[in-house]
View 1 (cartoon, rainbow, N blue to C red):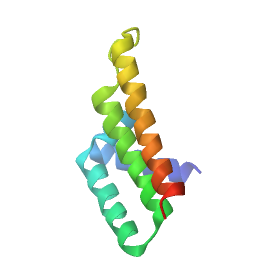
View 2: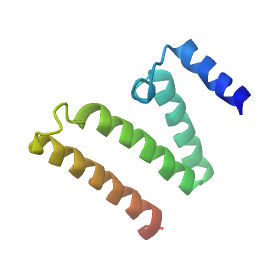
View 3: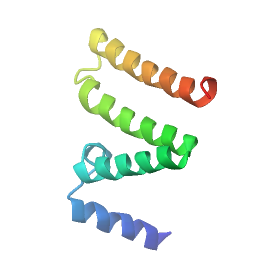
View 4: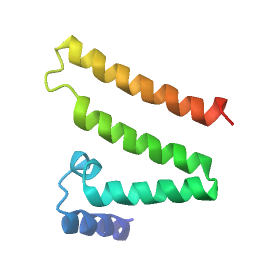
Length: 98
């Protein structure tokens, strides 16, 4: 396990990433996820495509809509609504639509 942790620490140092929020908006990570998403769509791997869409969608919503002041209910409702909308879309494509 320590070797795997060292591997991911080396990648984070190489990319200049200090935390998960930095990784979610890093262009290399986004590009890698998009390439995997396109491959999964081409290969017909529906579950992998849904997982990658969830990762990318969550990252975008957190980056742009996460409230700076959690006591502001308007911003919090907008954030929770966007996360709920993403969840509904993923459930629709995962379980309802074939």
